Length: 188
Image 1 (cartoon, rainbow, N blue to C red):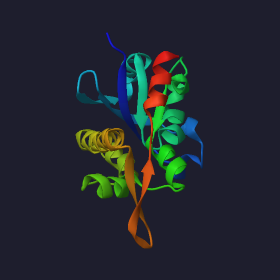
Image 2: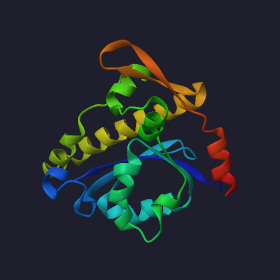
Image 3: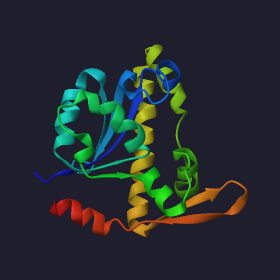
């Protein structure tokens, strides 16, 4: 079976406000949303399904996320006996920073490039979990995955994403050339 490309996003039960800044080990995963290019499907893995997700991740040739190298992977890493960081990875926010020299929210980036954005705010996710609104939490997380996937697809297709500027009506182009990077990842 062909190795998969996985788009992912995690939600946590708590926040850095609860556990201290950059204390990734004390953040607890409530669920992980993924999109699989091989199956063209979305799925939310709950905390008790992280081992199943691990098998999916091990069989991936590429992970795609948004701020995923800074947040998602460090939080997820303690759950696996393999190196998540060894899997080739495109972090859209990191790529935008390299190209445009600035950070931007997923919602603003999606609004500018797709015409729609996120369905809520990340700080609501722990509250949804706490209130037992797991289906609502899954919908929120999967929407973030969908937005990230569609931004990634658009960036691959056109070679850039538009990054809105705070005090300027003109957006700047963050350009990408992932073909060489993706080919290199497939060879090694």
